[in-house]
Figure (cartoon, rainbow, N blue to C red):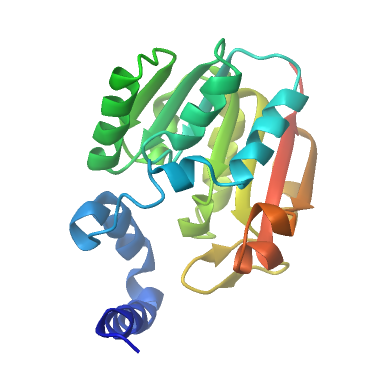
Length: 231
């Protein structure tokens, strides 16, 4: 076992011991300052392997299956990699991405400028900044492996905000488990939480096929689609 792996195991053990007391703050700190903590912080943000990750094809297919719409907001966008992928196929949509990591947002903005992409706006801020957004100001809201770092006690509040700012609903790629569980991140019980929210016309949770992801995403990964009651 290499020194690098040993250090990762040690840091994970320390994090788990502190999680019961500082989980919310540790996760916020990690994602805000990830570029200082990990030398490979760019991995998963805007590299070619991540841009072409198979699950993004699922996202493209999902958007294609929806009636034509004009705007999409992604919470926890990183460097906007999902939005960049979508813009290749749906150039008429206006995209907004919010992420807490200023460095990741800056990298994304550099990419947009270099590639002359003008229909994506990236904002460095906490995802709860959507509280400041007008109701029904975007058509859809998207999350991708983001709510797994949100505490169960504040998840309903965030989902309600996502419903409020959207016209049609939201799409989520998250990990889920009946009853909810925590193992370095949350696998929320979305069936239970969504059933308590008002304004939802319908929702569905679909398993992610093996060819699109790996590891615990095969067992726990879900595509969650929520359709809002039209007004």
